[in-house]
Amino acid sequence: MLIQFGQDLHDYLYDVFVAKFDFWLAFGLIAQLLFTARFLVQWISSERAGKSVVPMAFWFFSLGGGAMTLVYGIAKREPIIILGQALATVIYIRNVMLILKSRASSSETLSR
Image (cartoon, rainbow, N blue to C red; front, side, top):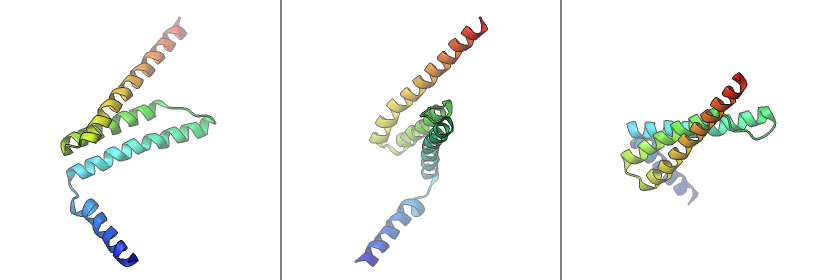
C-alpha cells in the first residue's frame, strides 16, 4: 500500500511538473516566487527593525506577483485565481499610491 502511494505520488508530480511543463507553467511559477518573496522581504525587514514593518519592497513584490498571477489565471481561464487576484492587485496598487503620497507629503513638509 505504501509503495503504491509513493508510485501514485510520483506519477502525479511528474504529470503536473514535468509532462505539462510549458511557458504558462514557468510564468506561473515565477509569479508565485515573486509573491512568496514579499514574505521573505517583510520578515527580514521586521527582524532587522525588531518590530513588525512592511517595507515598500513588500508592496512591489505583491503587485508584481499578483499581476503576474492574474495574467496566469486569465490565460488558464481559472475563475478563482482571476477573482482573487483582480481585487488583490487593486489593493496593492492603492497601497503603493498611499505610500508614495505620504512620502511626497513628508518631503514637502521637510523642505519648508
